[in-house]
Length: 286
Image 1 (cartoon, one colour):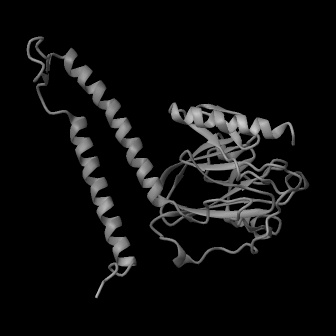
Image 2 (cartoon, helix red, strand yellow):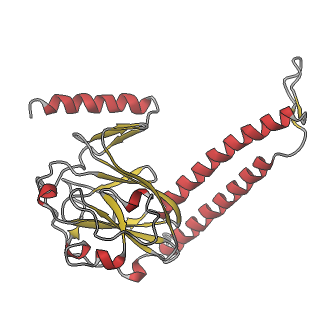
Image 3 (spheres, rainbow, N blue to C red):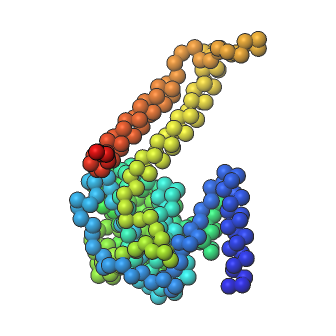
C-alpha cells in the first residue's frame, strides 16, 4: 500500500493535467474493485419486464459467469459503449443497458489502479467491436477469460470481433443454460463499486450519434470545397476586401448539416415535451 498510494496520487494529478490538455483519458478510479474485495450481492438473474424498456430501442445484457480466477480478481474490467464508461463487470454478475438501434461501439479495458489508457493507447484492451443492433431485439454478451462458448452465434460473421475472444455475443438459448447468465447476480451500484448501468442510455447515444455525424459532415464539407476550387467553381477572397468569396453554388454538405440540425432540434423538442408530460406539467403555485 505504501507503494501504491503515491502512484495513485501521481496518476490522478497526471489525469487532471491531461484532461485540461484535451486528451481522452480512460479510467475507472473508484469503480474498478474486483470480486475478491467486493463480491456481487444483487438479486438472482431475471429479465426486466417488457414494459420497463421501449421496444423501439434495443436491450443489451452483459454477464460474467463464476470462475475462481474471476473470484480472486482485485480489479474488474471496464465496459464502454460508444466510448463512454458505464460499469466494471465483476465475477458472477449481470447487468443491462437500453440502447438506440444502429451501430454501437462496445469496448472492454482492464485497469491498473483504475487507469486504462490515453487516446488510442490502452494498457489492456479486452474487446473492441461494433455491433449493429435492431429495434426490439435483445442481445446477450458473455465475458469469460477462461473458456469460450461451446457454440458460435449463428448471425455473426466468424471474423467479427464478438465471435471469438473473452467477450462474445451469444444466443438467448446459450445464455439461458444453467451455468450461464441464469446463475449470475445483479451488479448493483454501491459506494464501493458505483456504476451507471441498468438504465436507458438512448439519449446519450442520440447525442453522440449527432456529434459524430456533425464531425463527419464537417470533413465532407472541406473535401467538397477543395473539389469546387479545383473545378473553378469557387471565388477567392480579394486581398483588399476580406469579405465575400466562397463557392459559386450551394454546398451539398451545408444542406445535410442544416437537415441534421433540424432533426436534432426536433429531437430536443420531443424530449422536452416528454419530460413535461412525465412531470405532470410542472409545479403550479396558487
